[in-house]
Length: 182
Length: 182
Image (cartoon, rainbow over all chains, first blue to last red; front, side, top):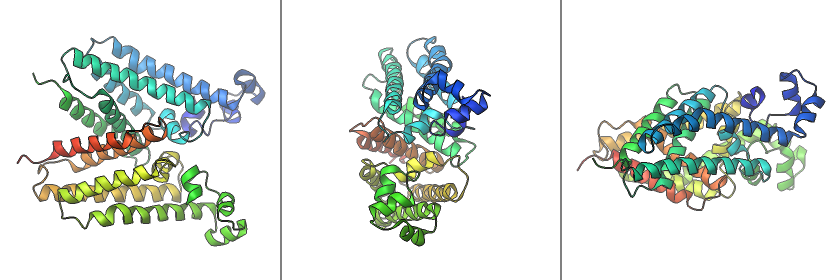
């Protein structure tokens, strides 16, 4: 994963990976078949790690706001750990948005799937009476995603030290505004 | 600008530009000197257009909320026009965030400068009594930027038809929450 996280999916080649893993290029090639299959394998590994570190521990929390909050806290923490090297999913999404093919398709599937999980957590929160019954889950997910993207840009391009703090403050404000009146 | 907007700054080469402009490569090279100078020229042209279409008409509005709202409306409209091809500033910022050099430096300068303009408009709005006196302008700019980035990702990667509408809804909610109580 080292090569991919440092140079992004685009910088990932059979050659750089072979070098880092001290394998021959033909050895890496025999394992992955092509550069594209290598990139897809890296994305798959990313998703596995994301599910293990964000989704799986969060769904152990009770349905509703406790679970939604756990998802958001773990998501920010996951991203924050990626910030020294950049997140291959976020950078990759901007890199490949106009490159049709299996890699773009896979990213669309991953991001759509993840948005679906967050939408579900928001709907459970409304069903449990923790968020307003009429809360627009799609709009909320859109705004949550925006905070994550802003965190990435601020930390990576502008090298702000407080981007995770700002993302958390934004998430708190978003959730508070969507709360049911008690 | 055609080549840059379709393939991003990274896809921009003396060759593709020469082809599109029906000039010889050496003619383009003589004009720009290097690929990097060409990319910097494209960024400069982008900024000129952004200032002409977003900032300059907005600052004709009265200080305070009318000006801030004009900035945000025009920014979304500008981005919406870029969506079929992608915004070279947003895509470029993710592409070059780990590539030290004049191009990255220029992007940092442009984005920092623009954030400064929006911060100023928020502070004027507070000074005019339109927004809460204690409003955290940096936090608000961070969240505004997030909505613009989410709009770009939704429109470009996920091909959502309603991303500008969602960005506008988020901006409205942000501004309403920051309003002074009348």
